[in-house]
Amino acid sequence: MEERLIKVGITHGDVNGIGYEVILKTLADVRMSEICTPIIYGSSKFAAYHRKLMNLPPVNISIISKAEEAGSNRVNIINCVSDDSKVEISQSTAHAGKCAYEALEAAVTDLKRGAIDVLVTAPINKLNIQNEQFHFPGHTEYLEECFGGTDEKALMILMKDKLRVALVTGHVPLAQVASKLTIDDICQKLRIFNQSLKQDFCIEKPQIAVLSLNPHAGEQGLIGKEESQIIKPAMDEAEKLGILSFGPFPADGFFGARMFEKFDGILAMYHDQGLAPFKALAMDEGINYTAGLPIVRTSPAHGTAYDIAGKNIASENSFRQAIYEALDIFRNRIRYQEATAHPLRKQYFDKGSDNEKLDLTKDDDADTL
Image (tube, rainbow, N blue to C red; front, side):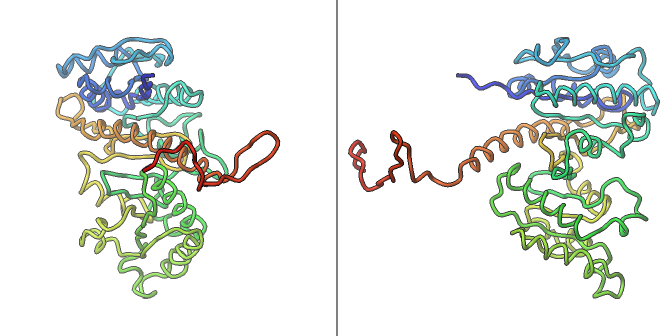
């Protein structure tokens, strides 16, 4: 029986940015439709506008009304915006934010009901997308609200190959970072990170580096006590759960000496501490992965890039990698679930009403090795 291709829901993001450019450039390669079933949530008119504006390679797109109609070996699109009458390239507008939200809402609805398997999001503008339904700093927090629970919290991971950087605090003002760090929160992020490295990336015993908050890891309390009073105690609690964490390391020396090459993951205390060095190292092909939730969502590591929108110079490498990683993670989760569903070999079997112990020394029908 032929294996069904994974259905990839793709949201168009901010229609005035480079979203459609990187989507169309990625899907112009016919091999993408051979390894998955792409379903764009957006507007065929917007797609045609961007393709014509930049003279992009043609993409054979089938308009469908619902995800169940998506055909294999082709690109599919669901028209789900209420007003696709205008594009204002390079501009942040309320209309663009509304279109971005409508596409995201439609894709999330389908993800909830299992009509698509994974979600890949093009960049949004975090300001113009705000409305009564979307009052979050970004995709990560919104998806946590949609799919999270008491024990399921989202964790932002920026990644490229073996470089994986997760954040304790995400989209919060720098002035609030120290007050938001707690032993419980850091320990929870370590637990989510550790589990993700196991089930999503097939690493049996992950080793996680933890960055300090203060310069020089606080210099033994001389320039900060968070390392000794919060971060290290959180690591000790995580160790009781079997989590292997190391540090806390001063961020400058850690990245400067390329110590990140020795670890499976890096936990940064705040956004720019982890993302600034990550993007310097891996901007072109880096991706953003939302770990910790029962769904798989990835996105390119870049933003809307208004400054180059409509100029046909945006690279699609990051978006392409986002699709590849979503497929890999989806498959890895299935393998992990299968491997851990019945971890112990059965020593008994049913025979009538009696349970007889297996005698592994007797096997009359076994071939002789």
